[in-house]
Image (cartoon, rainbow, N blue to C red; front, side, top):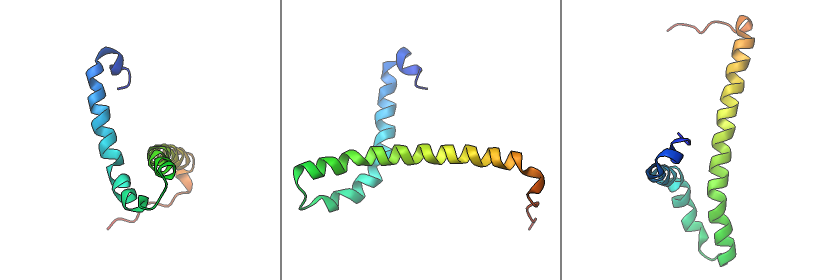
Length: 84
């Protein structure tokens, strides 16, 4: 998908929409906490939202891959899931 940016710059609009959707909830939670902070502290807090969100998503994706690898490696020692 990132390669498509070189061919179709209009795809940036999709990135902007996706980023807005991804960061909307954390910013909604953060905004009430900004009252009483200095301008510099507000900017720092606002800048941390994307860093924390993206890092967390990458960590989840990496953890999923490690879990799949572990299940494949240990499939014989994992008991079967009970059927309901």
